[in-house]
Image 1 (tube, rainbow, N blue to C red):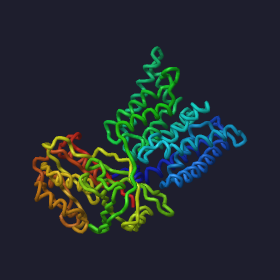
Image 2 (cartoon, rainbow, N blue to C red):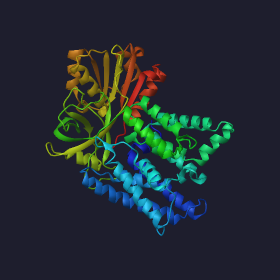
Image 3 (cartoon, one colour):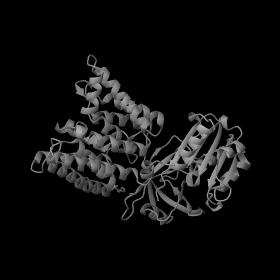
Image 4 (cartoon, rainbow, N blue to C red):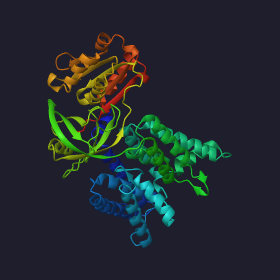
Length: 501
């Protein structure tokens, strides 16, 4: 069973969670300023945040029109709130301060369109904006949210929720490790505990770790590169680090890291056009999209994309989702398998209403480590629940098209036979490459149990297991495989679907 925290996180999108977290920090900071716990005027805090939000919404909308892009209001609000929390608050009567806010918003929003490659922005918008104002105007960020002790508990608590939602603890720990090493090395001669205390209580290290470095659009696509990225930014994070008279700042460290991230995993966005929509199961549709140039998209089977669907009056879940690619890189179209529920989100309703030949959707931020091992001799076991079958459809279709025979067993669980998706692909795989598929109907035959795994896969200890489905399901099978069946953790890969409706 999922914990109450995970049940809550499964019901909210990443963007909405971050937006609520940042809004809460601004509100709490204003209250603490009013009662004297923070040295900032509460009116200045509220004015700065509201002014930045309105201006970001306006500038982002104008630039989206100019560049014919799909604007994301939530993303603009998040950037505005980050700026409000790292630029020292000021009053509307301070005209130079107001001018600074105007320029920093223009730089931040423009970075998404002007400093973009393949329609994908390279830099964290807030970070690059304050880097530009620091060099061009001599106005840098103070990162006041990180150096205020009364806010620390709220920063850490909310940051933990964000990192847990994103499942990026590896990235955060590598950043923190790099930052600690850098601080200790650059402060040789000082007591180590004093150095660590100063870093924890007087720098924005926790806010930075949870909000800035974890931004999905500017982090590497795979885990090994993410760890190196986090360590690099951490090593540059200490203000004592300098080169040619230029001392590091959090935003400068992140911008350098963004460049590294782009070099090791370049990304681009594509506007895809819907070609076909097919009912393949009970309330399950397969969507086939054509790429801009008509060529197959480059990705590894099992990876996912962030999908943006502009539609009228988006609900609180917003207009972006992460979906695993159901097609193989060998196929011309990009395919998605989507399960529709009642009640559905505005995103799902808009998606179901798409008409072939007319509708478009934006796909980008390719990422994911849920991919097959390079060694073709490695025996594999796939366990899928419901629409969690999509990454396996991609992998199996790839093996068929490449005529690559691997020892693969698929256990596919659904509540009824009508919910089985892509059966024709798995039947074809059995005929052509010898893959075995065991269908489990939980409404009649029961569930996938340790006994069933032992019976159907007697050599399970020799296999690498891939598990895809709901968060509840993958958590359960992680425990069953490791604790009850003795499968080493390094032989278990998981891919869970948050279950947005």
